[in-house]
Image (cartoon, rainbow over all chains, first blue to last red):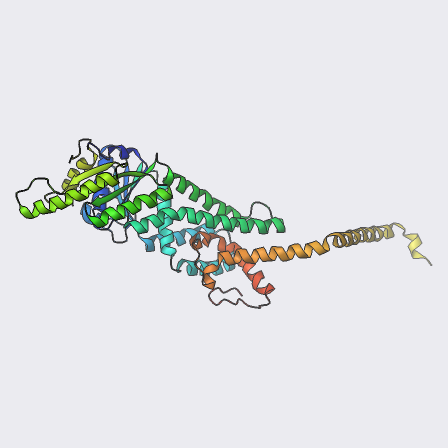
Length: 314
Length: 103
């Protein structure tokens, strides 16, 4: 197997997903580092509420992009922060359009709506959508280090759901305007129309194999294999293309230690299964390293393992 | 004796006004005769559609989850007036929803 993730460096959006604990953050960080060193301006985004990117790079990262290395920025998305920012933007947007009385009532409604359950998730979704649409032109490539699979699949289906919803709202509004014979400059219609455009753009970018790919990370064990198979199926249904699979922490083939040999023999069964079941997809093996990965030096090593054409062979 | 004979021009202006208002009345009458029935129906339909739209926007207040809440924040100010009209139309002097104060 002489395969690597090198071809993915040229994309606009990369997702790293998989079961908890298989090394998503490690692989996403290493890939982002490799792309930045290849000359791409990269933003590494963690969407898992339990962020660990900061630990990986051994420096604090917040809800705004922070420089981590030349050409590489990091960002840890925070739902509560995004919701506050969203509400502040809306209030700022409407402040010149209405009189003081209406504004007072409107602010009450806005604060109420923003405190509803789901508002934070929605603000998070909006921010991710903006990043995927390429809102921030300081970056060529956005690498998402995602939360465990289920959460991410829901996120990927969300633009479609939201689009349907906004469409229904527009239809309802249009039917009403048609009867009352208001003109086409209805501000509600215009706002809904703009949302719809953004969602379409978001979805188009997400579903374009040329600009976006999903990398699934796993280890050679029963549960991660099954979860990967499910994720492939569901991503396929959603129409997102699979960029490749990373089989992480593969044990060394020869070891004098009987315990390690026994583990290796069992692992070989799973590795064979992976070869068989995921044959249509690109697969990259990453060996178990002598030390755990954090800090620039080890990330560098992993970045090379992920992206050099002569990856490990079985 | 007949002072109006002395000032004939002063009478022509009110007569013209009367003609105009008569014309307007005739037009309104004909419009009403022709469209009145439909207009009432159309108004009823419009207000029903309006109510549906308001419900879709304010679903969370009546306890239904609304995935688009955040995307509706900037249209809320435009809907305040419609919300007011709705609760008046429903025969409620003040906003029936404590969480959504109106008047």
